[in-house]
Length: 92
Image (cartoon, rainbow, N blue to C red; front, side):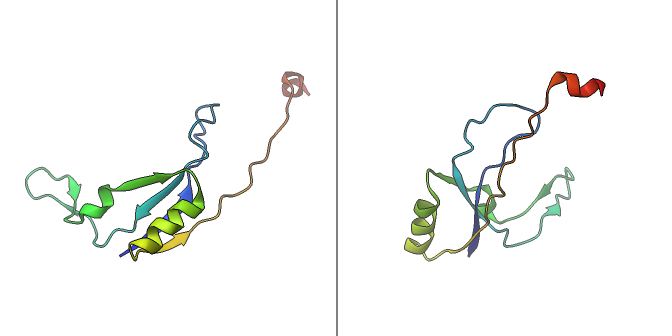
């Protein structure tokens, strides 16, 4: 059983920064999704795909993974760059 730990990215459609400090632990899918014969919806028998754990610090997520024997890979968060732009720059 393996998982990935990452920090939640900012939504490009909104300007708010709520919940950006949370770290998320998600399990890697154990089997591929396949279409249901009756409805055609994609699904699988892997129940761990439905689990998403949230932690305030990356250390807490790592400790949880070590405690329960989960092989976790931490994905680093890219640095946020602020693009300062004035309204007048649209008319240059």
